[in-house]
Figure 1 (spheres, rainbow, N blue to C red):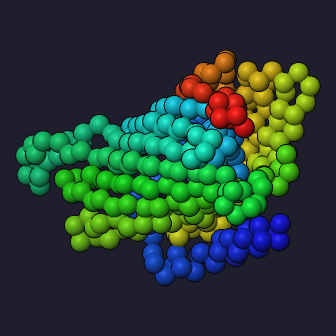
Figure 2 (cartoon, rainbow, N blue to C red; figure 1 turned 120 degrees about the vertical axis):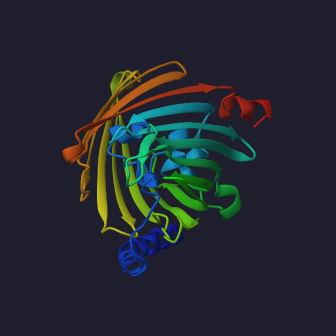
Figure 3 (tube, helix red, strand yellow; figure 1 turned 90 degrees about the horizontal axis):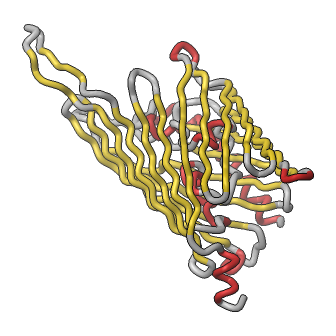
Length: 318
């Protein structure tokens, strides 16, 4: 227990120290990596670092994949600002012996932009897009470290950007840990986007390195009602510490009502969402207020299938 406490204390010190490094390095590019994914997470204010058990976790803390109980496929569509669209498709597969493996692809794009020279001659169109492919792995660390309730995870991202005829490529690594302190309370930490992006022409952008610390409290009530309250602290290279607060209230394990607020962000603030689940299928919607940009809308759908972890354990006589 003391080692776990020390681990998260060190991460907390790192969270406080990151701004100094950020100001020395300058501003970051590839800011699409800061955009939250998954309508369920966005409806909770993106306070998802200590959340676990679903495929969306890979975008916030890969360690959250370790407690998944069945295969899951999820898709997200986002109407972003300035006619931009963001799409994501994610899949994860848990195995009782090996752990959970996952993969995702995400694409930010917009309609082609007409291009003209200084004499107003038509130069055709310019494409703008950001593409990422992510491979994730998560595992219960009890067997390796002898710490019950501790999970670890990692993701590798391959990135490609296209802007006004120029391209850039790179890669990044995500690392995460999640600890179930009690049956109702969990804490998580993740370092995201540690990597490199090649130059756009003569300009060098740095990836938005981010440290996330989070906590989540779950309380179950009668008749399948459940409340999740979550808090995240986030720090990126180019901004001060921010806070994300979120709530998820489930009715009869079918309807989810969500609300969240993001503190310290330039354009983000209140966000909310709804979800409906039946058997292995769930559909979620979220909206967030983006200041002068107005409302942005998220829609997600996820489907669980295949043998559950409990069934895999029974097959192995565990």
